[in-house]
Length: 91
Image 1 (cartoon, rainbow, N blue to C red):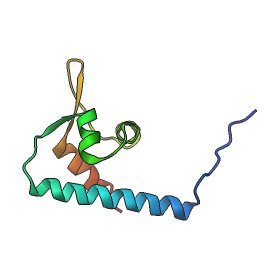
Image 2 (cartoon, rainbow, N blue to C red):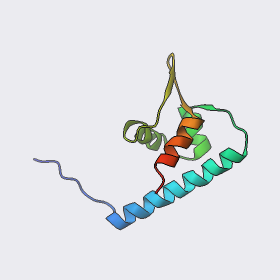
Image 3 (cartoon, helix red, strand yellow):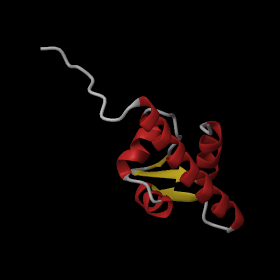
Image 4 (cartoon, rainbow, N blue to C red):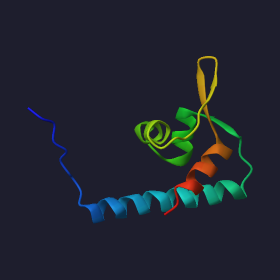
């Protein structure tokens, strides 16, 4: 039996979802730029601060190339790397 991809959302709906997510992320980044924040976030802190799920963050890392800082057994997201990542993925 072959795996078949099943589309849950139409292409137009996927585009609207993507645009909405990018808009929310862009708005959050603009707020962050206006307020001094710490530079490095643990993955869980990052998800809480930006209001995204852990799975979404993992997708950003694995599939879209968001960089991760590894220090020992801990992993951190550099806010500056994320801002560059988000700017690169603007639609």
